[in-house]
Image (tube, rainbow, N blue to C red; front, side, top):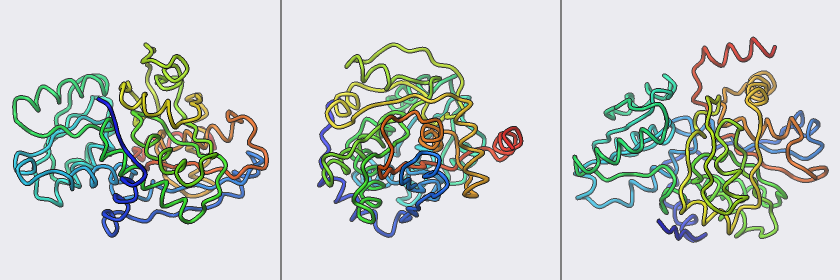
Length: 322
């Protein structure tokens, strides 16, 4: 689908979400600044309701539905965080939510979905499998499908994370954004470029799921090989709508190694006492490894996008990298 989201949509979402989402902390990190030789700040969406930025887009989308659509209920597919956001937003409206997740979804995310009263279906080995099944169920049940990223209201909602940060600190030179489906990076880039047109917005993925990296360079949806990833929330394919939008407003996409994501998760726990999932740590990994060129002396923002990691898994990662 063709996406048409404006800065005004993000400003309106920001107004509508007041009191519904947490105004998450924006903190500077002297330790990370020393490593990266730059002035590094972190937007802690790991402290957001439902444990990730996804609550923003879900609340904005569900608020746009008609009474009739809400009565029929909603359905979505997700690696976990979008699902929790939709389940939470639907519960506030008294709407029924059916959520399809792949077998790889972490237990903590499945538990969160159930906590908000949604019906959970586990299907397939990947996000793409879960999404196909969810579309079939949407046809059968008449529920409204809430796409995780190829959706104007979702993108506008996610963009409020950047707007919040930039209203506090407008002068960032570079913004690093975890790139999964593209809802967050498209929303962040729209907000950031409207406020400071020369800011660089760079998406970060892992080598285990690199569709943005290759598609952005080839300017078409590229076929890529997927493997298991610590950054499960970024795993899976992208769509033409998000790619078309990103090609207009995003500056680049870069890749990090799985091992470096693990190191970043461990470092965040030890240095900042933050429980961060792999998807939320990819920007930190890029900064720690010097993946982003020409950062010296720049003011850098990285979005720490979520905290929904199984405690046992994080404990194992910290133990290994102690």
